[in-house]
Structure formats: structure tokens, C-alpha cells
Length: 170
Image (spheres, rainbow, N blue to C red):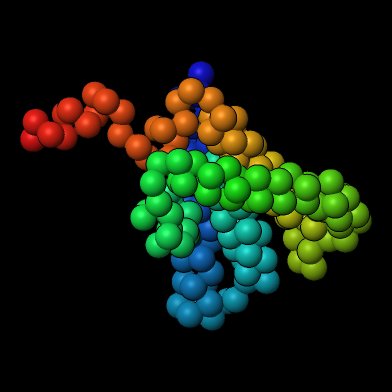
């Protein structure tokens, strides 16, 4: 089931970015080839860009794909990596989940304002931000649970006994 959800998320992300790209090409052709600029295309491109970025950040990128400064982390012993991982999981996950209610309130409030051309409520435009906050917050909550469990070494990148033996054979 997880693979099906991942495929659906990938399809939605690809479709939104594909529509964005096609709209951009369509806009360029009409503006520069036929001298008929569109009024709605810029707005649709911005809406799809906002959606695509938050959607990808929430559901498609892995933790290692996000920007990280791991200069110190990589030089820590396994137990130090665990402590560091617990600290940043608490900070990032906690802050993202803490921001959900206020962000939801603001996004709900923005349902009454609409975009100038397409008349799309701004609440719908920024709704993916709520999904982004929830997804990242829950990701780090899951990470925190794993860090206090018996398999914490794999979470911080410590090779298991079998992986260590496979490396020494090569």
C-alpha cells in the first residue's frame, strides 16, 4: 500500500509540474509568436509552482535530499549522532507540528481572498503548505520514535554487523 501511495504522490507531483511547464510554453508561444499575451497563465504558473514545491517537499523528497549542514554530524561517534539526531528531530519536528494550527488558521482565513484573474481562493493556493508542515513534522516524529528504539543505529547510519562484514570482504 505504501508503494501505491508513493506512486500516486509521484504522479500528482509530475502532473502538476508538467501542467506548469506546458502552460509556460503555451504562454511563451502565444506572447512571442502570435503577439497574444494571456492574462491567466502567469497566475496558473505561480499557483502550480507553489503547489509543486510544497508537494515535492512533503511527499517526494527523502531526508537526505534536503539541504543539510552535516560537517559536525559526520565526525561524531554513533552515540553522538544519536543525541544530535534526537535534538534536531525534536527541534524540526516540534516546530513544524507546532506551526500547523496557526498556519491552518491563516490558510482558512485566506479562503475569503481570491486570486485576481482565476478567482481561486488563496486558501486553496496555500493549502499544500499545511500538508508540507504535517508531513515533515510527522517524518521527524517517526524518526524520534526510531531513535529511542532498538534499531536506532540504522537511523544514524551506523552499519549493522552484516553490513560491516560485507564491507570488509570487498
